[in-house]
Image (cartoon, rainbow, N blue to C red; front, side, top):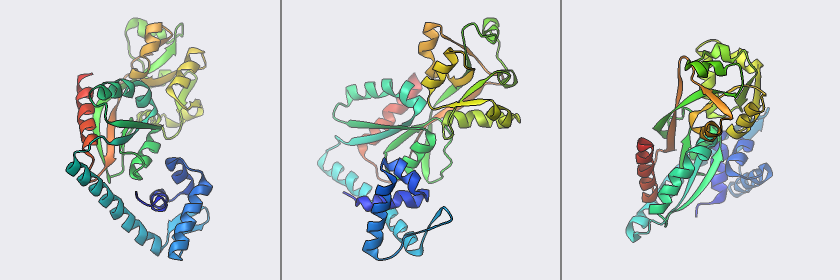
Length: 302
């Protein structure tokens, strides 16, 4: 019901980038530019300054941004109030999840949720952690589940479970001797071998980079890093003998059963949190609250 032009404006104003807004909104950049121009024509003033490859809000842009924040909050309040009045909670929820979570955690969680809540329509957007956080910021999705830290203080972040990351090597690799002896391995030993990592913006990559920074090894890893865009691609490359990697323990269950990959814990251990992330809104659809509660219980018992 809200004006699409305002949604597009809100995304560009938050991200200060037409390109990033287009990615988040799943639009082409020319389409985003067209919507902004229509809004500027309506108000007969520029809303953004575009100079030296930098986008900034004009005075009018700042004013409209403040109004759009209130408009979207009021819309959420109205939607929730009508549903409370009519008892119509058969909402359509849009979820977003980073790659590891969407592939290895969400299918079972959402499958069990739908058994008890068949009337709730669920849609899922998949991106890396940065992309999911941007979608939450811009009201593109109702709830995000990410595998990296969330630094935006305007969002609510709630840990749902802890995940361990382990070194993965192909069977027959010389490092499997650590697994045979039941020993953990230092990251310095891992980086003596060709290393395969996730792309920039990945929550998994950011957690590993923080681990390396604490040990002064960030640049050493980057020099030897082959970047791939998904856990599945990395697992395939490791199985093919292209290098070693560090992956979530939840992502390698199938390969462990098949015996195609060997996990080795790190010394010291490397863990990270999976977190729910959502807008700080007073009013939310009841169906989302019920999904959140179901997901909390699911994460505590699995």
